[in-house]
Structures are given as C-alpha cells and as structure tokens.
Image: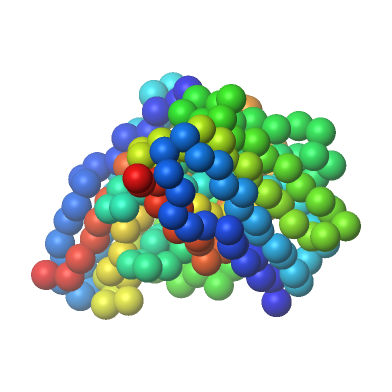
Length: 108
Length: 124
C-alpha cells in the first residue's frame, strides 16, 4: 500500500498568517491527491482534488500544489474558522486510497 | 440536497458482529461508488472499503480484509458494512462517503459527501 506522511503533525498560527502543510507519498502518485478539512465532532470536508483543483464552495484562500511524491496545501491568510485537522489522501491506481496521519492547526 | 445517514453502531463484545447502514438521498445512488472510512478515538482517518456502482467490485484495507464485507442495495439507496470478528481496535466512528470521479485528463476520485458517522465500541 502507498504510505502518506504529513508534516508537521501540528502547528499554531495567527490570523492572517500564511500556512503551509506538506504531504509526501511513498511512491509517485502523479497528481492523484486530495485534501480534506475536519473540524471537531464533524465529518471531513473535501477541499481540493487532483492536487490543485478547488472543490466547489471552498474559499479561494485554500490552494494545493505538487505532483509525484510531494504536495502542499496552503492557506494564504488564516481565518479563525480554519482551525481544524487537515488530511491528505492519495487516489492513485487501485484502492486502498490511504490517508495521511493528519495535521492539527490551531490559532496562536 | 445530498444526504448520507449512517446508522447501526453500538456496543458489541469482542468477537461479535455488527452491520452498519448508510441511507442516501438527493442524488442518483446507483451512479456512484461508495466508501467506508473510520476514525478511532483521537486518531486519524482510515480508509476501509470500496464498492462499485453495481456492487460487482469491492476492495478492503488489509486491517479488515476477511472480517468486514461491503454491500449495497441500489433499490433501497443503501450501502452496508457487515463487520465480523470484531476486536477492541475496531472501536471507532464509521463514516460512509460518496466517491466523486472527476474526469479531466484522468479519473480523479475524491470523497465529496460524507455521512455524520456512527460510533462502534468493541468492549466486554
């Protein structure tokens, strides 16, 4: 199975800061990479698919880049409502489509 | 409005069985692949199982292969997860999710709608 590793595991940032979360795959997954946001007690929400495509309704301060094995999720200007845990997920080839371990983002 | 409603969770003893259900509405269920994902307390997301639109093709994570079985009833707009030989480490919130396929220079699959989750506790 393909392993997904996120960094950092947690981070704190201030309102308005730029935040970058990285995700690394154990082998090339081209651009078959999704990002999700999960708030406490809630189901995950899709933010980005195919590495860089913003899901409908997601604010434009979220963006994704990368291909091959290295990917990033960027929040250009952190807002209070962005406090959450973020997960990457690969969807390359056949399942299982594994998730990263998550990055917990809170407000400084 | 797209809705997925998970149910069937509860307390079960080790070695026991449980069947989870996910009833959907607001979209053409038979046209979508479906997934089960779980999240152990305080832990991350774990992809568990996949079923194709017709139910002909299924996949499982190694951690549940041979114990869990996914199925669907397109007439009832429902997907199921039969869980057997349950262990303490299966304790988690279980989510069903809809798999959207974005066909743009490739088939890009993502989970664009989720149920609210149902808690399974395996304990004596």
